[in-house]
Length: 487
Image (cartoon, rainbow, N blue to C red):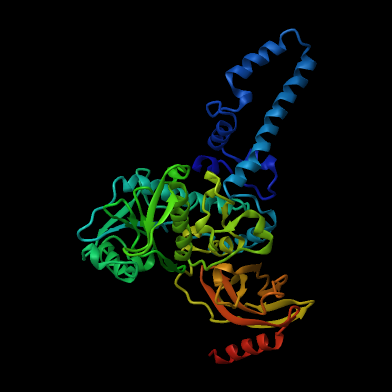
């Protein structure tokens, strides 16, 4: 699957012709091999085709032969182009040209700020934590190299579907292999559990202090799962992510079956539970890898500062947003489980300024204002319009509105997103087509994105008197009350 995904490089205008011509020589070979099965060669370049071409040419007038040759080349190109959309869909990397226009505009603003900086040195550090009396799982280094590469490929293709150049996550490597920092804990296994993330983070920081300061790094930490005598896998380790542009940590679980190569294993099951006394789930090895590789990708998003995000209305046809519940559907299209997981517009918009992707530390440690310079809410035909001003010393390049129902049954995993770019310090957002016939109160979060990777968030309550009449007065009052509290 990784080879198939890596064969795509999406151009700015997203035509299939540009998809074919912009791919590098190695990528073209890989893609041709997948499509034709001819040892990585284009069918028009194979020995068999050349022999047939010579036979056809014999006794045929040159003018007619040239026409036949052009037809052959056209059919070969057509076959490749017809195969591309299906390959992209299977990879969860369907081009999004409308989103690409906005994201490319934002990327130019971010790139202008970071232009002329030193070559990138920011890396995602991978750590393997084992208790004092524990040992790493068998073949962990080889398996996790594949697993982390797969997640990196997912992020890479998430950028490329918008026409943005990306090689994925900047991983720490030595001689081509993923560097994994093995850290042994100070306590036995029985002293660590799912709530021990702060403790293990402190021990990791102390252990790695001679090499680097984890307070200025982004870490992906794996913990070996346990296994009972009856063969049940027990995941009783920290499993979450948090962070910002300055630093971050992602806690994830390792298992001897965690491997993207096992995403097609649908005829074998395993029993797993989240604690020693919890009821185990019985799932296929393929679904397990969708859940737990997807879990790595999702929690890593939090490590990089991403909030939950269920995508925008225009993105529904792409599948399931990674930062929504896409961790449960990750790579399901590989084994026929369901729709693909995609990296949404709002997520990529924020990652554009993340130091791991810009490769720059310019302004990384600078603070940003805790509010907007100005906000005004209004309503037209039931839609809420937000007009704002963001004229800060640290330029803002985009604003995202996250909206989700105020309900005990739902949380921000269900947040619909409304992103836009900031132009000349001003922005306008229209919150339209909310399900106000069913919900009358919503959470509204406005997130301002700055070119140094910093974000600023403000929370509001969006209420409706009826299915089409929003309470605009309360929104404006909340904004004014918040603004008065600022120095």
